[in-house]
Amino acid sequence: MAVKRTEQQHPKADGLDLQPPEAVLRFLAEAQIEAAGAVLGAVDSIAEAAEIAAATLRSGGRLAYAAAGSSGLMALADALELPGTFGIPRDRIVVLLAGGVEALNNLAGAPEDDGEQAKRDVADAGLSEGDCLIALSASGSTPYAVAALEQAQARKLKTIAIANNPDTPIIKLADAGIVLATPPELIAGSTRMGAGTAQKIALNMLSTLMAIQLGHVHDGYMVNLHADNLKLKDRAARIVVAVSGCDQQAAAEWLDKAGGSVKTAVLLAAGAGDRKAAKGLLERAGQKLRPALSELEGSSRSQHGT
Image (cartoon, rainbow, N blue to C red):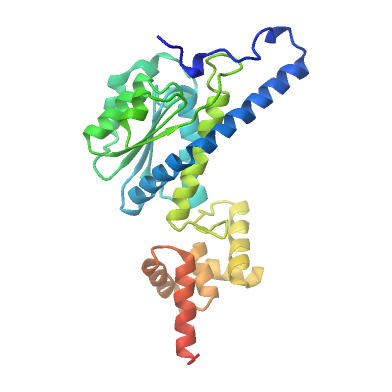
């Protein structure tokens, strides 16, 4: 049986333990950079996956992640930040982690082999048609990830897979398979390193493009953020200033009238009659701020006969 790329020895690994600290760190940094570069080869498949994820959330479905070990940590990091960064409701995001919550204190290896538990986790989460599951596995054959994907398909979910080896079970099974062809790890098989880095970058790209397609980003601003602390409230006000052109004090007032919604505050600052009118503009624009502003501007010109 051919050794998977993620288990092969790195060309610079021979005598690694004899190298001076600075040399080892350079090798590690170079390996991380090389792994990150592998993501560029998966741009098309990431775009396909983002479209599936966006369509799922747009239609009211839930987005679930299923993984074990280091891949599970990468999935968890991406999933937990979606509500705060892009305002996606927390009940629309599901994380299935081999070993459950206990894995956050003890990342044991055995749970990743429990495919039956993965099936139960998918069922217990109530995932069904209209939802989407993202399965991650560096090897591409982790039993937990494979079984979760199989159960998801049996329940008619849309499926996305991310792996660092080609022609592996999860890639073959998924509706959209993302292969991150990272080089062998400097520490053979330690996929928390290069493979994990590439997975995190791919997830960042996937979820950010998904958010853009959902209308949660405008000119690089997170206009659907959930401002639940002082830093984010200040950021929300600065976004309203940047997009609408009003001053900071006015932005804070518009945000208050908008119930904290950046998009609504921008539209109020731009001339929307009230909160209800602003929400109507967003609904007609598919929650995208740019076309909502265009409609508002066009309506204003019409009223003034220009």
